Structures are given as structure tokens and as C-alpha cells.
Length: 87
Image (cartoon, rainbow, N blue to C red; front, side):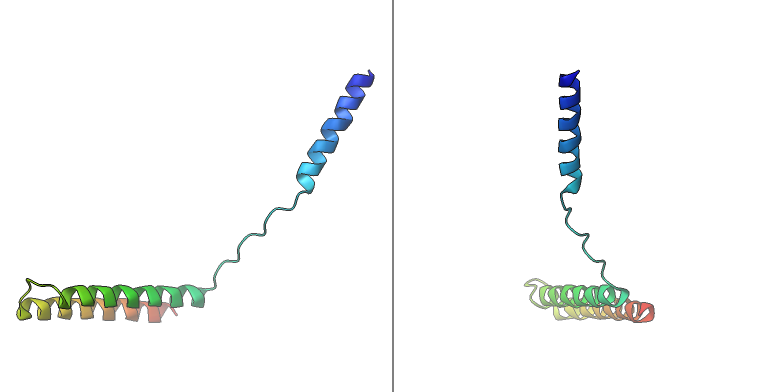
């Protein structure tokens, strides 16, 4: 009987110390404006890298580069407008 009592107390003591340990706090969720600003920065970064790739392409002709830049600018403008609407 003593062994059962001691083992029960030991088990309860260990389980209470496990539950008493502090868990790290949940990271805060970004607000809507922070998310939109983050997406705008990502969009700008993506636009600039694609623009650099198009302009520095060794085999593309001037006409091809112009057409690709026109399409890239239109897509960038559309995505920027969508982000502004959400804001």
C-alpha cells in the first residue's frame, strides 16, 4: 500500500511540474495593414528582379525586351491596384 501511495504522489508531482512549465507565447499576428505593406514590398522586389532579368538578357532583341517590359508593367500595375483596393 505504501508503494502505491508513494508512486501516486510521485506521478502527481511530476505531472504538475510538467504543466507548470511556461510555454512560449504565441507570436502576434500581423495586422491587415502590415500584411498589405509586406505584400507590396514583395511585389516591388519581384518587379525589380524581373525587370533586371529582362533588361540584361543577352539574346533578347530590343523589341522583345520592350514587349516583355510592357507586359510586366501592366501586370505590376494591376497587382498594385488590387492591393490598394484591399487597403
